[in-house]
Image (tube, rainbow, N blue to C red; front, side):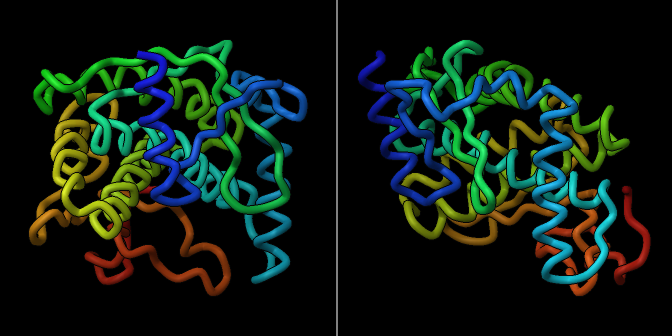
Length: 247
């Protein structure tokens, strides 16, 4: 199974930079993934994000920068496992002591693995895959990081679970464009994920054509609060005339 999950993650990484998890043969230069649940570590990453956003657009509230960072991080954490299911019918299950990250000045946050378990999804229906994905990725990998964002930066659970949902929707969109023959499985799994806790109510997803899915958030990531930021394509505010929205 280890060779299968390694091949599955390699196939996922070929989709794009947000789908790439690096195999870590030496921990030099890497930090334990558990550190990202440390509020002080997150504060440092938010400061880097905020400085980059301020340099482009003007003053940016820390809370807004934290939400934008969390959205990018969620994309890095959920895209590879979802693609592995769609492309290779295996769900990677990261081990806490075998998952890593590396600090960078900008771009996708590098995620690495040195030890990972797996669930064979070939005989599982979409609901069963969603249940396993929730346990391994949404609760196990993402959950502690979301809790740290919530507590340190006063971000609401609605915004944070919406960011996870948006990251999943973005992954399906990317798979639809690059691997259309396999994207439908990913879309169906995301549909099931959005029907169960903790993502229930955060967004909805629907088919808009062969192998293409569209996600609509039920809340906002706060990107519009960046001067000149505008609105994301899945934002609830676009469907409410740019007024209101859960924050």
